[in-house]
Length: 199
Image 1 (cartoon, rainbow, N blue to C red):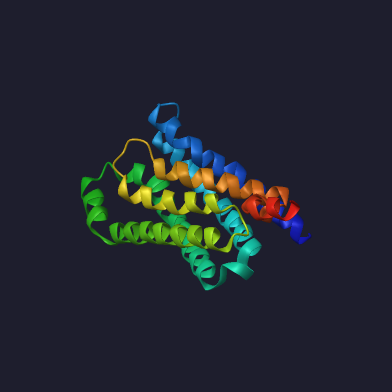
Image 2 (cartoon, rainbow, N blue to C red):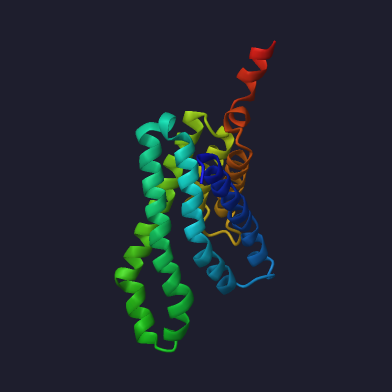
């Protein structure tokens, strides 16, 4: 498989699962799907998020430098840890709710610490990755801003009934996926210099 095909595969993955990430908070808030159903969606989607992140990083790694590498590594680590947490919350938690002592113990033990660590890795990783995308200019800069802003909003506005942060991250992923799929990332990222060159 050529590098171009790998980028296109990553781009397709980013568009599909980024799109689901964009619309699912609205569907949950509207009652179209349940939070449990959305939990299954996240559990299945996370490995594809990682594939999309690999393509995004590979496309810009030469210009993104250390910042891009650190952002990619932290974001992937947060996503991979989230698989374990989602497995517990979606598949295990419903069966232990009949035991109040077990639920109380889980809420005060290492599970809560793991949730906090995973959340902060997600926020920090996507902020750094988004900033590196905006700084490198290989992929659409505004899409990188959406990733970083979405991660911050997920923290600041976590109490809202609609997960606006996830929607922003999903929009950024769709945009980045489109750029990877089309194979004209630099043209999408910096139209102004290109127009100036043709004058």
